[in-house]
Length: 225
Image (cartoon, rainbow, N blue to C red):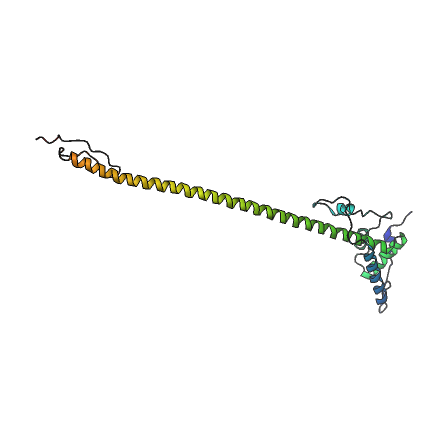
């Protein structure tokens, strides 16, 4: 029967004053860092998406579009992350957790460079997707700004047209008011002539004078000779 991965843990009971097993020496750390850098450099910097995922794409959809497939052995960087956070080792020292996972990977026939490469590929896919989305947002921003400028220009043009119409209407009203004012002056002059004429024959003059005056009813007879 196959063993669970945590059956391969390295159990360490540190003795007072003794070094814990599995701790990497500085030279080993430097070699590991160099190896990781070499693996990262070997991975394509800009993965090509077979089908551009939508902006609402999940991470799994992004990885799928970048053609990042599940390895046959089933070990990905996420599985290793789950192993590191497993209740069986998550409270152990970092070097013990590292050694435990390495033992489990070795027992499963998985090489650490495969996990690093998987991690790098996913990171590059996310970075590429971010660039694609950023360009999309920038292009939309530029397109919308141009459209807004056109709308603003149309609004300004319409505003000028309507202002011109308003000014023209106000001028018509002003001209008509002036015409009416001049007519009213002539009317008053005309009424005054009529009033003066009638005043020679009526005790109370029925002729109206001024703006909007109602004509008075004749209450007296004409003057007799």
